[in-house]
Length: 132
Image (cartoon, rainbow, N blue to C red; front, side):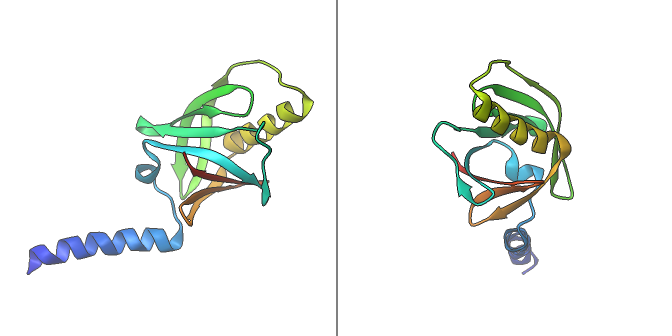
């Protein structure tokens, strides 16, 4: 009887996380995300940004023009990426500005939530990612 209670407890914990939308580092590990919307608006195909989470919450991705990487820290569902490194090419004023907004949100920290199998990153702007 006690053994049957353990799986039920685990399922209950998982459902609790899914219903509240909180995000853990274990949920992020080995996932890949494609940017879908910013502030509720679909992004143009040329703004093809994405990010991935690997071991120890290392973050890497493509910000629309340049590749980036850094050390992620998740504290109370708030993601901050430290020691960001990136390639340094320019792809035009509009795309460069968009890229800086995304990287600024990662550097400053943004609240993460899971909603309808999407990763929502809320800072000064709202970035919505879909599984890649």
